[in-house]
Image (tube, rainbow, N blue to C red):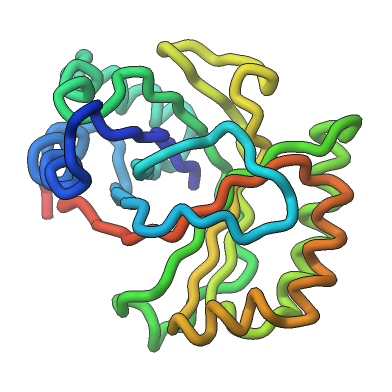
Length: 233
């Protein structure tokens, strides 16, 4: 499964509630008509506080869309099936310069069944490589070492490491240097107390120290997720 994530900034002069309402109730039904689409969520930023010793990167958003497909080819067909209708609607509520990250999803800690469908606290982080670290070195440290350290930190009930496999700007693929995000972290917490416990723990400090060896920038947000109904639903 891959995800196509649009990095959204609200239109100048538009309030957050108006942005959220248009995105969900007007734009959502347009984008949901894509062929081959398996799942569509809109993630709205509710907290942009930087809670990490690693400096911030270039990803500044008010929300991000997530459209899931079985394959990259299915995604391309899906986008083409709208014949530009979705892209033409974006300037009505958001910055038309909407960069895209295509992610290969990797589930590390699966959310327990008893928590599925409940409102959880979600944290998303966009990661850039440290200076001198190659893409291959980043993945090796992130997937083979860092994931094990994170699993020792108390409080987290769900954890994904999603690798960026393509970056799209203006409809064309661009190199890392033009959109310097190598990976996206998704984490879920049952309560605010669990979230605070996570960040205050010595296990988090240990994982963060390791992260600084291969992560050079991080943008972190708390988001609320709004599933978009599919036309066939």
